[in-house]
Image 1 (cartoon, rainbow, N blue to C red):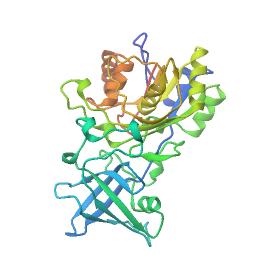
Image 2: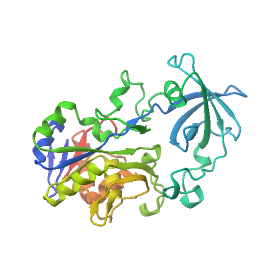
Image 3: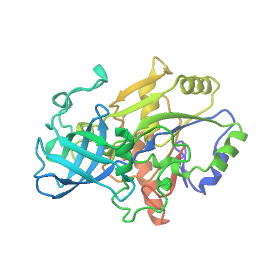
Image 4: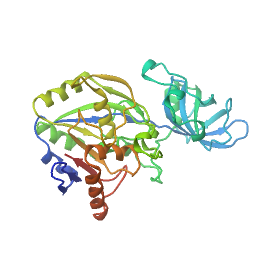
Length: 342
């Protein structure tokens, strides 16, 4: 674990199990408890038999999903897809119809926007389609899960023997297509030690989408079109965070998704309960209001994740810290090492 002190610029090299030495009784750790769904499915085109991969991105209804289909060049509206299983869906069947590519407003109401309102939102050219599922042999959600597999990042080339390794130990509500990987460092034993130390642990839910990792391609960072994510900040989290702030204790976010949820929930000088979609975009110049410390992994350049951490510390300090991490052979990405930014 690389500890970055924003005030002094000091860098400490520690083990993650030592994190309690940097926390105090009354500090509130806020983690994202979203669980990764088996969102990667294999299918064939009913007309031609050609194989495609379908990665579920976001539900509009239980039956209709936005999905990334690859290869997508010859996938057209009205096409029927028949899904294949590795044997875990005995007695079940799953098919889908490809719908028109533009995304209609969902039942999330005014908190959602149409594609035209989103400007450069991912569309047809990126392989994103709307598909309507139908299933046989069970409840639709259960059938989709039985046919699916865990969508591991592309730099992991082998399936995990135990898919739970790509879940945090506190993962509960299903909804993410990528793990909130900063939380992978925690074990039940470490969490018990921190709680015994007087550190509070609370949970928000922020379902992570594939677009989290979409590179910034705009010429200026502020011109990038940010993705949206569904977040839930319960009343209990708001109360704990506000109480800590009143007592001069810190709110410690685990991962960039928790940061986004907490900062979205900050209104009128306090953290408020929040249930809805956020398009909050954090990049250098943003003034943090809810988060005092951040636990995160090492991120790719030119991503919104790197922009977020560069806004939390200075860009210069983050670059210096990353140079140190590379020199000391820290591991990057999902199963990599951790940063604690104080």
